[in-house]
Amino acid sequence: MKNRGDCDIPFSVPFVHRVRFTGNVLEADRRVLIDLLEPSDGRPARVQFWLDEPLHEARPELTQRLRAIVDGESSRRIIRAGKVQVIPGGEATKNDIHILERILKVFHAAHLDRRSYVVAIGGGAVLDAVGFAAAIAHRGIRLVRLPTTTLAQADSGIGVKNGVNLFHKKNWIGSFAVPWGVINDASLLETLSHRDFIGGFAEAVKVALLKDRGMFEQLCRDAEGIARREMQLAAPMIRQSAQWHLEHITRGGDPFEQLEARPLDFGHWSAHKLEAMTDFRLRHGEAVAIGVAVDTVYSSLVHGLSPWVAEQVLRCLAGLGFSLDHPAMRTDELFAGLEEFRQHLGGRLTLTMLRAPGCPIEVHQVDRTRMQDAFATVTRFADSYANANGRDLGGY
Image (cartoon, rainbow, N blue to C red; front, side, top):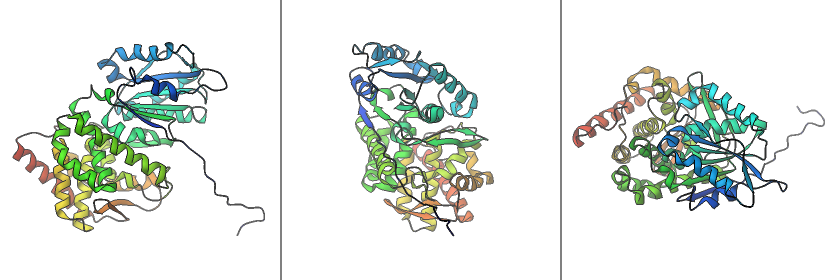
């Protein structure tokens, strides 16, 4: 019973999600970045750059290009807040809480404020760590993301989540924060290893299965060409994946995951656990590929998905170059991922499964025996596919 004067008042906060697609943002398309960095109250926009170390090593000239973008602005619309910072790439960045502390110390030393800009240039782990620091410093510094992996451009770089790992659990501390801007730039993908290049397409398969059967069919047709890095095939899939993720976040009705379901985390309950169980030697895209494969097969065993579609999904993922097998899949410890997934959101366990491509459903319990059958089916397929094609698909 409410007391006099008690109120429940729903309200909404307006956000703008600015996403741009470019071909060479640090040279010919630099104006796209400059225009995102708006001056405030007649004062130049203060910007601090954070650069992924592997990208810095592969392209050391980028540091000078970033300086030139700012220093070359004759109107002095923007100024640099300190030197370009280089940060370790990969999941190690999220596993070391001292790196988060270092980022915050650099923000503090540069006197960044809520109208300053932090430009993070890197893969998903770097965007997560720098983005989390930006979200909690002054309760929010403007963040501009330049994702440099297919995984980040297709998925995480578009999202509104930031976080780092703690207690050997994925993204145990983090925040929801809409980035000021995201620039998906094709030239930033050029130095990716083969393993990191294909990694993002696990998320593309996932979102296509959830949202767009036509996109899924196209991915199946183009899988081997994408694995050969034929950009006329790969680039449209990255863009479509990014646009579907953006659509879900901005128009799906639950950008900050207040409801009990996380549909874009199809296949992720096991993926997150596999990453932790392998000390993150299994990369996120590789783990997601396994998780999507397993939950697709499980959907065919329990929820009426056509076995032919399940086979199609396995062949698509294998054609993209994913192994779909790892020794950690054959341990009971993996099932602890179900409870960790539930705890992360709270409430009852809610997983997304498939009735058909483009037709996701929510389920609240898992038949452990059938899930074990699904893992075994995926493992058998991976072995058979590798033998038939005369190649080792992973070596994770």
